[in-house]
Image (cartoon, rainbow, N blue to C red; front, side, top):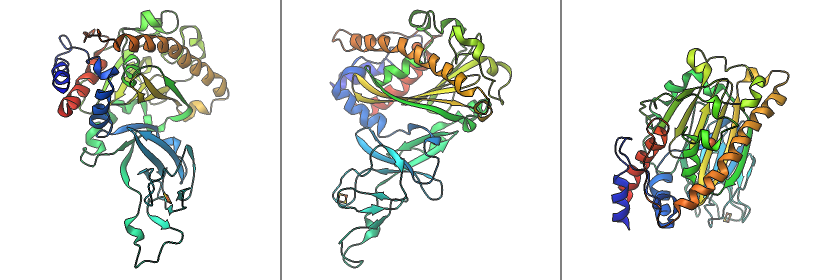
Amino acid sequence: MHEQLFESLSGVIAPIETAATLPPACYSNAAVAEIERDAVFRTSWIGVGRSDQWKAVGDYSALTIADIPVIIIRDKSNTLKAFANTCRHRGSQILEGVGNAQSISCPFHRWTYGLDGGLRGAPDMPEEAAFDKTTHGLVEFRAAERDGFSFICFDDNTTDIDEWLGDFSELHAPWSLASLVTTRRLEMEVDCNWKGFLEVFNEYYHLPYVHPDSINSVYARPDAADQVTGQYSSQFGETEGTGGLLESTQQYALPAIPSLDGRNRNGTRYTWLFPNMTFAASTEAMWIYESTPLETGRCRVVMSVCFPPESIAHEDFEARAQIYYGRMDAALAEDIPALARHYKGLASPYARQGSFCVDLEPSVANFAIWYADRMRQAA
Ligand code: FES
Ligand SMILES: [Fe+2]
């Protein structure tokens, strides 16, 4: 199986004109998904959304990535931390959901850790000499915040975040991404492979067929994808009006992100931070999707929408923001059935590797190369 997979992945690593799409097994085969878990999710910097989820000291989220339960929490020095959500006593999961906590306390036997992961209290355990608290802190992973986004990485051998992101900050500087504020965060499950969800967001090819009456006419033919140095792909395209609203609601546009000028004021930049986070930086708003696998044919998706603080201060911001959310939901309601059909076809034993549309799917091809390369090293 591995040899065959290795073979078919080789066809992906080629100039887009002749490159093959990813092998269908990469979407639908459970054994391949296990290789992917290790080769992709456990060795990459994983996007975990916007940093303003954790505003105050002690704000936390418990989530599971690549079958690893994780705690993300803001510590006393306002640094974002990531820990294994596994108690150092006998291994119970500790936190659930989201909340605020000034210490991390295990519900099983009440071992309690500081926001730095250090063990502070362990009821009825012997004093210092017989039991060393300092060797029983939570396992820590690297966490990083850049341009208002947060990332974690399980593997200490992976390069640091700045090398990973390369010229990401520079390319996105016009949008002042760090200053944008999240006004909506919405979680859902979708019946497709996690990669399929990210792919459809990053290609223009399906717009006239899946979104003929909602958003298609807003988007002009895009520029070529940018040549970048980081682990991401990005493609800018001009828009007729704004990509953040439906064709029918364009008159409700909020002011542009103040720092934008020139062509950037009249278009949308679609960026895919490999492997699992993508966003559209548009004229007045940014909308983001994180996608992680639940099963081969089901993924957990989180949508976030952000605006500049100047727009949030606008008197009818709430009403206008709803119109933006309506556009996101309408496009999604059209994409989701297409994604379910996509997955059903891909899961057939007769599915074969296909080819890319050069102008309209370059970011999908760029991701496929990146992914194939990591999977080949593991296969
Ligand atoms: S497993 Fe956490 S305190 Fe016992
Ligand atoms: Fe779409």
